[in-house]
Image (cartoon, rainbow, N blue to C red):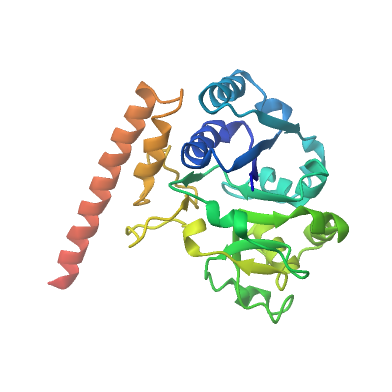
Length: 287
């Protein structure tokens, strides 16, 4: 079984998208079917065309583009590093061709380190609309007035979706209705909305399929590393212990050059200073 995948980006995430897709295909090209990209006209520039050419030449894969009219997203509230692109997920069943029954959605701030073959064997029962990873953020407390029976809270960075069921149950409308009337206690944007809507209609993936930000290295390397928070490995300030894996695949793309080396060097210096400062503080408190 081939696995179709989809990313959503704007122009700010073009290079991370290229790095993430490179890592996906280097480790899984034999199981990947179609590669879909949902983005806007502004991000269809020279840099994107370079990405498209690179993926085609290196992996013999076409990036199938779906261009979005961004005007419909202007009223949606976004804060921090999260933009309206996050809400493209609500309409995946509408954007993607009707013959696409199942899809792996993946954020562009991810790295795939090994095989994802387990996903091809997953089955959806009548009540399941998606598979995701529970990030155990204790966010269920905020939902007590909206979904009092909610026990788990999934991260939306990696989602395996049953689009056929999304269409038959008109899930996109359900998500958008919630988005325009969301309770004030919601603070994680589209992620909160999806948890409220799917609270009893999802199944849990192993943590290794969406390993989020850590300052300490995990005992086992995640299959998919997800660089959550504004501190990204392509920036000077990033303390994620797994940032080296982003750099590894960055090196394999056409976008690794002198500026990339400077960013990595600065990142290592900043991280070293931060670690030394923490060590000094611990010694001071221990006296």
